[in-house]
Image (cartoon, rainbow, N blue to C red; front, side):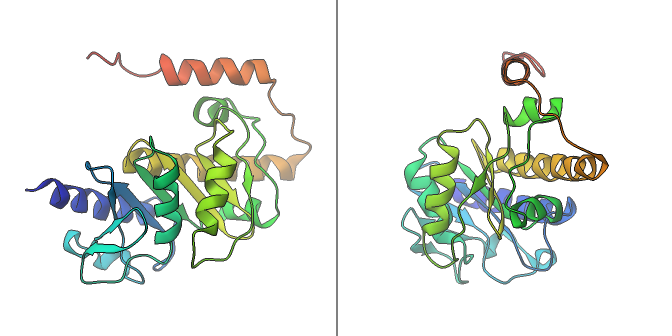
Length: 221
């Protein structure tokens, strides 16, 4: 299997994971992953139901969003993904969802405050708000990049829209999307119970450093 064929399968499977984790409805949402050449990426086709997705339907685009390979039209969010890849060299995976709880925070135009140790671990602070932008060009991508370049978070709540997450791979970006929705739900419930007390910055920094550098198995195993 060629490298591009292997990534097509990875991206197809990761898109189905969005549905499996309850992050998308019908055909909304998408996952992309950069190819090894660094100059192109694989993304879900537009308007195809998740149950019907197959690896050969995935579309390969260059970093301007132009289709290089594929018979179907790419996601309507392709321009946003392309902009992120052009301006964040370390990013190799991008996810977009309209997951319910995170999108509720985005609709209320409120960042999710870092009041859980799990948020300190995964996001290193609040999950920030990004600006409102209409779909169809790279304005959404610009908002994602501008918001996340000064944040530890790899998730952003785009006002009145939904969630974008980034990562070193497609699976890393999907994990962040899953964790974003999980903490968004918990914090929504907490906010209904009473005032939320944010963690101290010093504690957040310690949690983030431990999770990023110590948690899990040693990297040489």
